[in-house]
Image 1 (tube, rainbow, N blue to C red):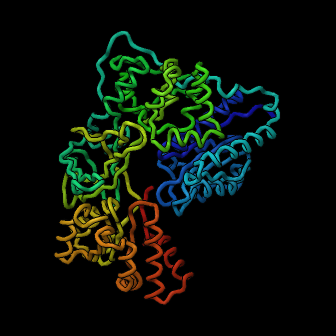
Image 2: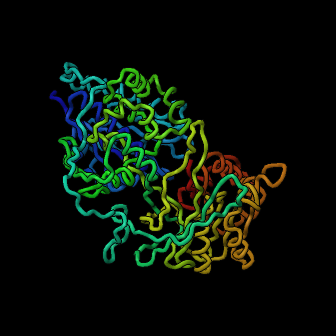
Image 3: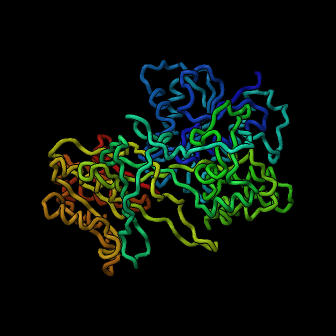
Length: 586
């Protein structure tokens, strides 16, 4: 067989699957293979019938949903009209990146693998199910999976066996070449351009919404700073419903931008254009203007404040000529060095910028052309919308816990900056859907900031005259972090809400939302079994969702006389029909 060309397609929500796909791409380049690395929705899926070797790398989002950049591909692949043997020419491998603390662990990868085989594709290796909860992270699965994959490819294509691959720590060509301009041209920040006409704001054309208020809602003595933030979206054409989310792209702090430019000896005011090298086929980063200033690139595009992934150290090691630094970088990028890397980087939340400062000789040798290979793009942040247009026309509100904490590093850790006077934003459909029927009750469990989407839902439902609403809210103290207390009290007094609160630290024994769910078993059974109520959970994914589910199933057993198995089946049936929905995060 001749030397194959390899196509690597990824579905990525936060950038991890993209990073892994690019890592596999570099391994292919080192083996002198022709390789393309693309998001699934940028690939014409109709061409899949003529491909011979494809690796799919995909994450799972929400409740077993595909990432945004593979949704079109997903719909096409699951068309019933596709013939059974249509992919019989294809050798493929599927690698899933997931988190076993979620119930639908690696659901997308498992389903994709099964569907490809159904359509006649030959799976070279079993589906890889990487788990973020593993002590060594996802690489504990990815490393052996990749070895098995390449071993199989070498057997299939014997011509590869005689090829001497590029050494692991020799630099590959960059994706782009920077061309600096002698004269400075007028540029505008594309993020602040208002979408024209009736266009709906999107990731490529966000709406610059004016920040109306940013108010702390937790007591000054409380350990966590939670903010209720409001934006003016007048003239934006933005519409949203309960359960939808708002997306925002944050920026790096000005002092970090300055330090980065100093470390790399870059003039922040200089301008450049990009040209793609062969392996990128002319694809440019959509959110970078051409020409672009160095300041805009560093402030709004390069994620220099993120904790760097293993691939960052792998790439950095290829530039290093300082023996001591190179040795350390190689250790951090090896399978054996992951414990050490975790202690150095993940545990103290050390940023990529801080790593550059720790490796000054290597940083001094870093060529600007490699910046887009080394640093991922800043990912948009998503926030549950906490208001309804029916209650607050032309306004969009969110509830946000400010990320600020200390580690053993001297500088306190904090999230990226996102609150200037105007914030570029757009809205995305959420995973939670609420019933349209007037008389269908809803039961919502939302501790902490998890209550945000339920405020939106309650405002919307009450405006529509739907008064059969139950809310279970939990926090530490009634007097310190009882979010939207006044709203709930007003709804309760008006007969529009049944409210049950768990204040975990206000008494000797800790009380959580699952305990309140247990106490209301009779009410819940009546609403669910007799009135067709919908049940929702939103909040932290640690123990809360599972504990609430256990309490709910206990209510089915106690009030409905169901067995353990029947209670499980009832909850499963509710989930399948959309009457049980959860939106959790870790």
